[in-house]
Amino acid sequence: MTAPATSRVAWHLVSGGLLAAATGATLILILLAWIAAILSLIEGPTGAPILVWIYAGTVPVGPFALLWAAGTFAVRQRARFRRTLGVDIPAPAPPRVRGWWRLVEPWRTAGTWRRLLFHLYAVAVDVPGTLLVVAPPAARRLARLDVRLARALLGPGRAEQLAERVETLARSRAEVIAATDAERRRIERDLHDGTQQRLVSLAMNLGLARRSLPPSPERSAIEAAHDEAVAALTELREFVRGLHPAVLDERGLDAAISGIAARAPLSVRVLVDVTPRCPPPIEAIAYFTVSEALTNVAKHASATRAAVVLRRADDRLRIEVTDDGRGGAVADADGGLAGLAHRAAAVDGTMSVHSPAGGPTTVTVELPCG
Image (cartoon, rainbow, N blue to C red; front, side):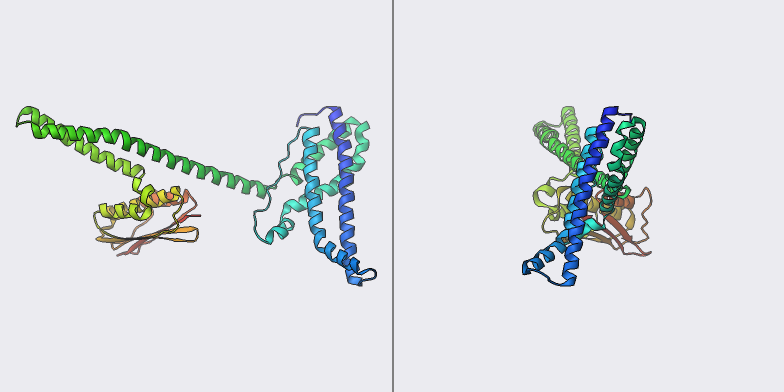
């Protein structure tokens, strides 16, 4: 922190002393009222019956009033540092709990106790520290101490910073996955509506010319061009399907997985029970997971049959791919199974492989589907 002007340091100390005095008075009044209510209920009613109701209401309200006051004055303290010294102290994230735990959780977090400790420091140090306005060197040292303690006690702790960082990274990763999926969809639409249609038109025109010409060198050249156009169209369709299958958007995982099974070089039984549908990025990952798993089976397992089962249970999508191959599958660092694990991990999913020697092999993937 650069050395602030003497006037700003003086205003920081004066405002800090006033705010600390108000904070201390408020917290002490709340604490005394709460303790008095408890003692009055213990001793029994000694006055009007309405007092019993007042005491009974004060006892449960007291801790929340103390919590509210500590949080409110912490906000004022952070604003004071920003206005007087230009120091921005981020507020810790609120506890992410639901239900009745929201009432108890603040007292279980370190941030609450750090705020109370800072208020105690402010009352003990900042109130008498206002006298240091007449001694600028000492006032600057106290201001630097205030900044260090405020950052440590009013800002997020180490664990909160790490949790916030993890949440930020997870959110960024989800945004990247969604953006990648959207880009793949755009490329698929462009190829399907543009290049693929032109190739279809070219193949049709070459086919008409091929049938209309008598045997000749020209017809042979057109036949070769027609065959190349048909082969290019087939390859393009496979490429487009590999980018993002249109049937997945239109008819869901059941139809898309059935299409993979129909193209597989072995018998594949498919069972899909995914209701309601998962988010589009999760559906895309599930589709490519099954596609890659069946490709691995066809290449390496020497299997004759396979089964694909997809079920959704609450907020999890479970994928099982089983084959009757030779077994012994291992998730090598550069193998196909490692690719499946990486694909699942990209969305906080998990993958496991059960593949004893002699088979059968079962690859299980679980994906979040909330």
